[in-house]
Amino acid sequence: MYVSVVLFTADLRLYDHPPLRAALSGRRQVVPLFVRDPGVAAAGFAAPNRLAFLADCLRDLDAGLRERGGRLVVRSGDVVEAVCKVAAESDADEVHMAAGVSAYAQARERRLRRALEAEGRRLHVHDSVVTAVPPGAVTPASSDHFAVFTPYFRQWSGQRLRDVLAAPRSVRVPAGVGSEELPSRAALSGLSPGLAEGGEAMGRKRLTAWLRSGVAGYADRHDDLAGDATSRLSPHLHFGTLSPVELVHRARGAAGPGGEAFVRQVAWRDFHHQVLAARPGAATTDYRTKHDRWRSERTARDDIRAWREGRTGYPVVDAAMRQLLHEGWMHNRARLLTASFLAKTLYVDWRIGARHFLDLLVDGDMADNQLNWQWVAGTGTDTRPNRVLNPVTQARRHDPDGAYVRRWVPELRGVAGGAVHEPWKLPAPDRAALGAYPDPIVDLADGLARFRRARSRG
Image 1 (cartoon, helix red, strand yellow):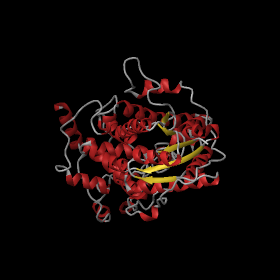
Image 2 (cartoon, rainbow, N blue to C red; image 1 turned 60 degrees about the horizontal axis):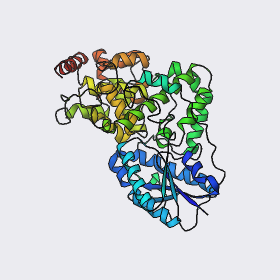
Image 3 (cartoon, helix red, strand yellow; image 1 turned 90 degrees about the vertical axis):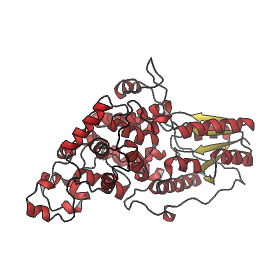
Image 4 (cartoon, rainbow, N blue to C red; image 1 turned 180 degrees about the vertical axis):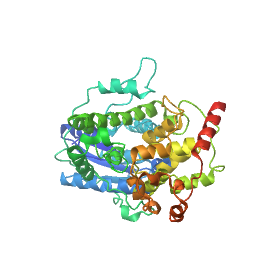
């Protein structure tokens, strides 16, 4: 009986899983393997919120495999050494895995291929697992990747996606391959108290509910901060408990502009993955326009602390940062305006903000997080790098009656209507009733002037 190893990485699901389907072909036995790799932790993954969500995902994946007669094998250590050891223990002749885009993922694939080939085994790397359209599948005539979203989206939209694969009915795992105990979120500390539950079962439940009652209004309501009218599927896409291919197929089947608008957001995710696949260094260095006049963590220490804690004096910024602390997640519009406030109004290096997001976001990954930060900071793919999002204007537009602010900033719950967005303008007795809520840490006009001066010199 031939044996295959399936190395699970950012694809922790059974539905629509090309590596698993290929590994099971020819009535093979399969070792479903997940490696707790310290190299991934060193690359920035090991934030408590993501480790907790990962633990949920692994337990759910194991449960799904056991329902089909199999089980998940978990090992710890260098991923190449662990895979080769499991392949030897099970006498596997091939290993299947999904393609990744980060510098670490690409190096991992090269190392693993060399090690397996030296032992006479084959490595099969599968596209269209982590993204809907593989990085490099669509390219402009003059480059290896698209640097602007709109022309990318035109070509992306014309791609024929592969068919969605059913989950396997049975999985046979060879005897004698041992596993470590599955991790548990109960063993972790420092979690956001409102952190969502992970796992494929939860992801599919959320997807079904979203397609039934949420996506139809997405085009009109996706920027509504108080309405919370987004899918909240990003953690499941990040961990691969949902397939982006299946997501696009099913969203396209939803009637009206909501499905189209939602598919466009999935395309944005693919866009950032193809940029990082071609330019892995963009995770830490300016992609397009280099700026070296940023305020550092040392020179802007007090402003950065206020931003992280949600105490800038700008209520919509503070509400968003407190949502991040509580849930390990933040509304997309809120991500844009908080990033703009740090990088442009405070003129703090975008990497400081990106690191804080990665420390807390359950869906934080190198492609979307880093390249969205660069887009906002004006060093990435934005064709209008000098745009600055005014937090008061943004609040009036996307939280007009202040419900989002009052939800997350309890000091301001007594302020009615849109006045909550500018509490410094309240009459003195009303301001005194706000207690310890701070005044703005910067005047918006001063922040804008500083930004323009720095950019004109840069």
